[in-house]
Image (cartoon, rainbow, N blue to C red; front, top):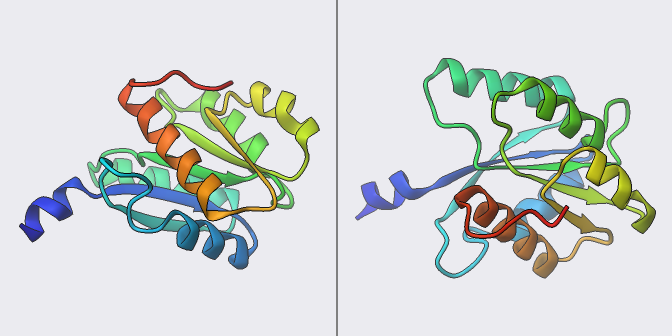
Length: 147
């Protein structure tokens, strides 16, 4: 039974230069973002280069891509929006992105970055769970991106 649970675990990545934000996301989503979805495990990245390396390392190891990327738009230097757009243009198939935003007026930038889900601040567990669950369902093709 443990082997089946491990095989069904979905790998997610959270990117923020703020360790507190990364912890809020991981704790908020929990081990399973919604009923009927697999358990998740997390890779953390504090820099855009860390995200790029984590993606390349998975590819080199022959592992499946991350199921979802949770990117903090408020990260300094290259934030989640710019990184999401970069990955959209550079990767053959970018994983669905949950973008954490601080301002409602950032929605148009999220659309430019081609993200699937936007979760506004302040972060709360229910919004995080719903956002990650929606992104996972987009990945499966059972819902369309919100824009």
